[in-house]
Image (cartoon, rainbow, N blue to C red; front, side, top):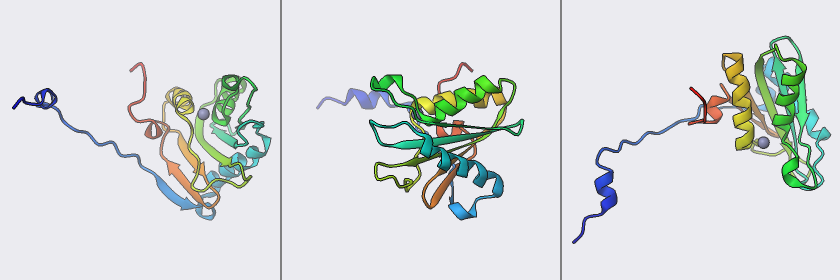
Length: 169
Ligand SMILES: [Zn+2]
C-alpha cells in the first residue's frame, strides 16, 4: 500500500491556533467614551447611500485631537466604484486631520429590513486592511467597537480583527 505523500510532507508541521479577543457587552453597558462613537456609527447608518444592497452601514472614528469623523457606505451603479462606511470614514479622517491619530472606531449596520443588525456587523476584509494602516500610523492599538441592536463586540485593536495581516514588517 502506498503511503500518503501529504503525510510525509507534514512530518515537521506544527499547528497554531489564533484566538481573537472579543469582549461582549450589552449596548447599555458601554462606557460613555465607547457609547459616544457607537451612537455616532448608529446615527450614520442613516447617511448611507445604499440603493443596491439596501444594507446601510455607519462608521465613526475618534481621533486623538478630540475630533470625530464619520462615514457611511456609498454605493454606485458600477458596484466596485462604491465604498464601505469604514473606508469612507478612515480616508476622510486621514484627509481632514492628517496629523491626528485614531483612538477607536465604531461600526454599525442596518439590514434590508431597516433594523440594526444583531449580532453586530463586522468590517469586510478590505476595510480591515485599510484600518490597519491607520493603526500602524497611530503607533498604538485602535479599539474596534462593533455595534449591534443589543449586543456590542469590543476588540482591543484592528490587528486583532485581521490576524496574519499583510504588512511590510
Ligand atoms: Zn468594507
